[in-house]
Image (cartoon, rainbow, N blue to C red):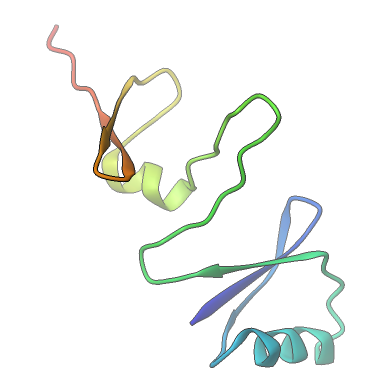
Length: 91
């Protein structure tokens, strides 16, 4: 599994390890100061919702579907998931 370590909002380490404790030990041994760790599975991302109910879409996902600032996303619920798709407008 891949573990990502952050200090404030800045990524300070990206580690491949068998479990979270092993990942934390690796980062600590490297002398890297961090305040938060998150698990990043192959194509899964975990992001917090802020006070205004916003979620930041990871850059890798934005690049995959070609979303840029000002684009529109369609949002809908399917089973227990919120689905987002880029809306393509025809000129």
